[in-house]
Amino acid sequence: MFIEPLCTMRLVRSASLTAACMTILACSTGYVTSNVNGEKKVYRVDEQGAKTLVYETDQTGKSTIHEADDPIAKQLVVAQGTAEEVGAGKNEQQTQAGLVPKRQPDDPIYVDLAPPVLDDNMQRAERSKGVVAEQIRREFVGDPIIKLTDEHNDRSGLLRPRIRVEAVEVSPKVSLKEAYRIDRKTGKRSKILAVVFEATIVSKMPPASYKVSESGHVLKNVEVSKRFAKQVKQVILEKIGPNIPAQ
Image 1: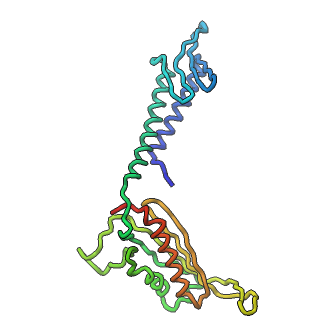
Image 2: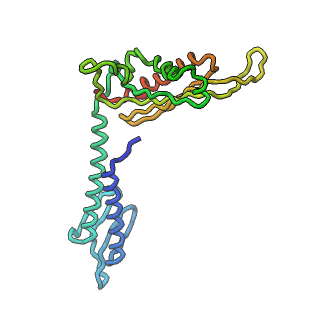
Image 3: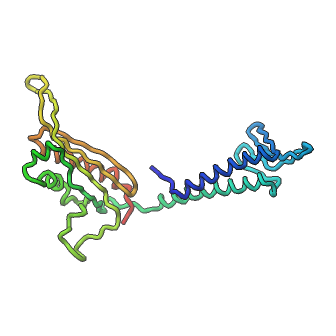
């Protein structure tokens, strides 16, 4: 989603405030406005009722000023200049965004894989602390494109890879829940204990956020974790990767 910078928002507010001031001024100093077939004309009316054309705006929105010294005309010039500045700023930002080179298909994508958050049931079921985290992490180590930011923490100096772009953040969550399935032999519903893997995947450049989940029988948690990791990789490689700026 594109978010306009704060300075642009202020310019838009300024333009709106200027337009409001013009309306108030027109009401208090003897101005009349006519709108015919989409063309707007603003007149100044003196005490004798004589009208002087101050400016007119055609159907395309183009304004022609006839009385440059009139306060209303001056306000119009300020409003138009502000609007043009806002438009120019937006166009420049879009142009710059389009000119930023994207990473090549074989360039690495750095991923910050957070330790998984385990619910109470999963914490009690974990054989030893860190087993589930290592099980997930193992699916990413050695990937030819996806590189974990902590993969070479044991290296130092020139041997440690230099990360020059913000990494993609992956925040996993693992829980144990009761679920129902259809028994293939009996055709009846039966209750099982299921392991549920979830993750929020966030890219800061460009801004994007995705969610994935995978579940299955707790006795097949290794297979479930592999399917889960595959989903996460697909999001990183296919949805986020092509839009990441080149390093």
